[in-house]
Amino acid sequence: MSNITLADYVGFIFSEITRARDHADKVSKDLAIAYSKDEVLKHFSVPRFKIPEMELTIPVLISSAKFSTTMLFNMQEEEFKKYVAGKVNSAIQTLLIKSSNVETDYTGINNEVFTKPVYYETALSKPPQNITRLQGKNKKVARLPDGSPQPPAVNVMDHPALPRFYQQLVTSQDPAKPDNIALLALAEIFNAKINEYGLQSAYRAQYPNNELFQTMLNEVIQKIKENTMVSASKMENLLVNPETNLVKSGSSDTTVFTIKAKIMEEGLFVKTVKNEETGKEELLVEFE
Image (tube, rainbow, N blue to C red; front, top):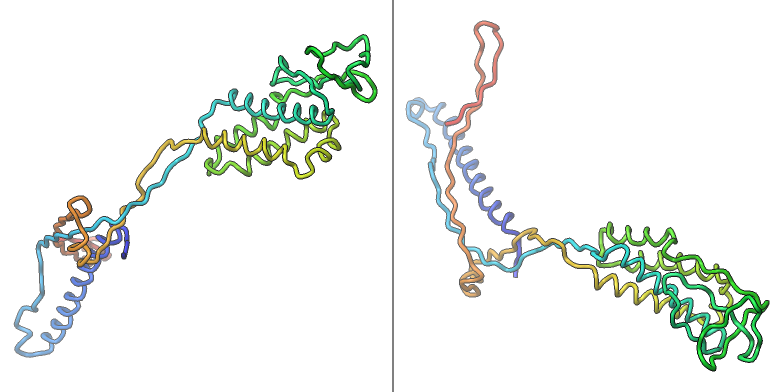
């Protein structure tokens, strides 16, 4: 099926009519020159084909239409930042638990600000006096190698990459494809947390293929896509099929419409007139 835009189709028809008039005028010009050289014909008016009005009825078979859509990431900034912060902290918790090989009760820990747990070698080990044991009956608790408590981790909500991550999403030219934006932003945030905890070696040992980060990344990308929606849609052009046999045989009341156009002929004349006061020649344009 031959598809062209409706604008191209109708424009081509009008341009063909214009070229037909141009061809007719050139023939009239040649006749005028010939008449002027003939002693008898020079007294005759030159034949000129003229159509004051022309009506066209053009059946058009609609084949398809092209649309453009505007996508928008419409998740609220605070909600998005809390979601990402929760995912990053959850990943850090998972790494700490897996690295310690213990069952530690993390219920009650705020996902937004995750404080690194204090580890002890066995459940019977006596913790230092200035450290509070995590709650949970008969839970095995581990300790850090030097037995000292760790300071709270950097709040993910305060990480500069997080608001930048959000702004990149809402201003993206292609918000339906956030993969690269999410990859770079999450890698920056996650690496900052890993470095803060000093868990680079533990992460490489537990997840040699970067599985933990990849899982978190996939979940965040999916969340972004779920909150990316069409905000506007418009038709760019209408595609039609000008093949007359298909218009006749492959059409229905819903696929064919008729264009009716009336072309009014106008004569355009360009001439020069000498201004008697100034002696200069002026260019004038007149319409018939």
